[in-house]
Image (cartoon, rainbow, N blue to C red; front, top):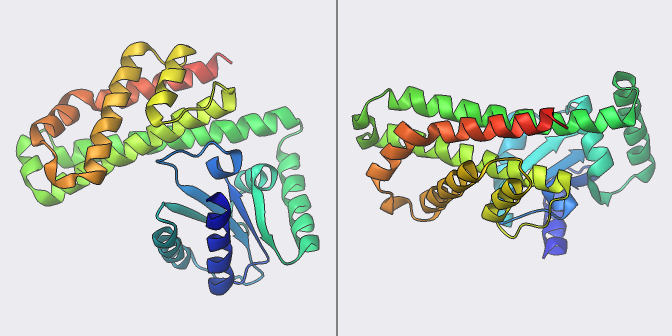
Length: 263
């Protein structure tokens, strides 16, 4: 199935962008993808005219084809840290110019080496950037929920506000799952079959405590209802989450960051 997915990505991008080479990175490159994972795709093109919004639309079009979320990265405009991550951990699924690929890889890693003398530090910073990015997304989503809710239960009866609140809870859940999967893979804690397995593995290895593992698994259950059975969301449950359980995300991220700080 993964081979067919990579072939679909290759065919789509060759038709739309004519790239020199294409990488898949992240969970699909590490074989840690799960049901809720998106797929991370990076390309290099000699054409410098690709704008951010155009790539966003292409990512949505590709997501419709693959039936999963897609992050599409232009290697030319990616940060030095992200380029290094892609070139060192990604899988090349297409290349029409291997010499160019090797040269760009050498340039990217040389630039990154200038910022970091030691290889161990390089990969630690890459890992930290992933964790900090996910925790910042979670915090941003929680803050948005609080602003929209505005301590007013009537906000949940306003469909526009309700949609915003639910969407941001979904995003916070997804980033929490991604964070758990990242730690599990990085620490080689096992092979989780689901997001719930990942939270249990973090608990079993004292990354998070039992209470927060249970709460996050319950939150993922709500997210699954919101994604697959939106019309049947119970507003009383939603209100309980907004009023009493947004702090679960904060406790979760603090426990993750505390674990990182002790390593």
